[in-house]
Amino acid sequence: MNNNLFQTCSREKIIYIYIYIFHGVSTFKAERAYGNLILSVPNPTAASIKRSQKLYSFDLLCCPQNTFCFQGMASNVPLKNLLSLVQNRSLKTSTVPPNTSSPSSFTVQHLLSSSGLHLESVHSVSQKLQIDESDLQNPHYVIGFLKAHDFKDAHIAKLIHKWPAVLHCKVEHNLKPKFEFFIENGFVGEILPELIVSNPDVLRRALDSRIIPCFELLKSVLGCSEKAASAFKRCSVSMMSAMEPNIDLLIKEGVPVDRIAKLIMLQPRTIQQKHQRMVYAVKALKDLEIDSKTTVFIHALRVMLQMSESTWNKKVEVLKSLGWTEEEILQAFKRCPFCFTCSEEKIRSVVDFLVNTLKMELRTVIGRPEFLMLSVDKRIRPRYNVLKILESKKLVIGKKNMKQLLTMRENNFFQNYVIKYADKVPGLLEAYEVPKQ
Picture 1: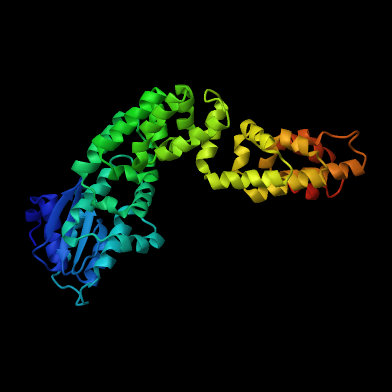
Picture 2: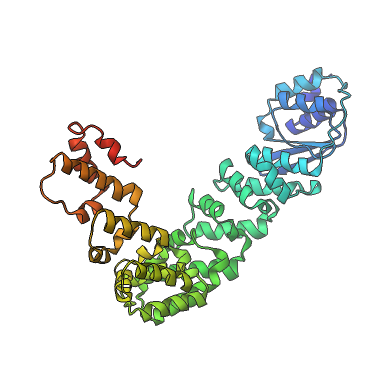
């Protein structure tokens, strides 16, 4: 071959000549996507594919039926290597039968090579998504677009696993305008991939009628784009329509805007409950005479929205069976709304241990409803065991206030009642069963 002829050829032309010589074909498809040269070669042999992967520095993308594709930056291919390959390679190729992979196999291989998806996830994803061999370019555009916006392979793999249809999205009409809006409103750097991966539903919602109105509403309540972005990440875009009427209801009922803002920052999906559900919860709290202007109202609202009326009644009946009056139950809820998130079984277990084992008076338990949230196995029983041992060894003088010991910070109790006496009392650490940090 004439070396001078090759010196006058462009790099890409040499690549094309290489494909012709190496694979024995004169027709193949060449495309560009985000700076990558994509070459589709028809009817490859298994041996030629293997040699190409080893010698030709492009990455193998996929193997649709009777075709394979390479992707890579043309500038990364050393010119002298290409010259050597073209000059020294004969037209002989292996006679191994061509690849006859199924469309499903094509999808699997495409996902593996293009997105970094873990092997165990590929099969499940391929059942939900088929990529038309004639429309290979769009998935490449999507992946290239994501990478251009700081999406790492792990982000892309997780996104495809959660919503495989993202590979069908149109970059110009869907992804680009939404990404531009998010970037303009503070979703920069790692925040943008985190938003999309954690909540891919945003890519399925209309920008003008859903996403922008929701973001603007959050910003009007929270006061700035940074807080709105933080809350938006944890919102469900499909439930945005309920947010505005719920906020209007709370304002109408006298809840200060700053309390609503706190609720949104703590748990934004609380404000996205169905409007009927919000109306029920607000009415229930009004009937309990909980002041809507207090912080307790916000906490009580969060709890009430998690429970149906039947669940509330079950918890009330359990407490009544343990000796609480209805008035005491309502006062306990006003004092510590979150104690009602405990299951009926847990409520029974805690009250039983406090009253029957620790010999704590029932009125003391009623006065400290936060005790219901403590774990018998991880806190109450271990601390009781330690105190019982120390009292038997006369290492603690006088009757200790069990209420204070139960609410003492973990590190303080461990240092003052376990480590302090561990050398003097063999087995004290075992009796305490220190919770894993």
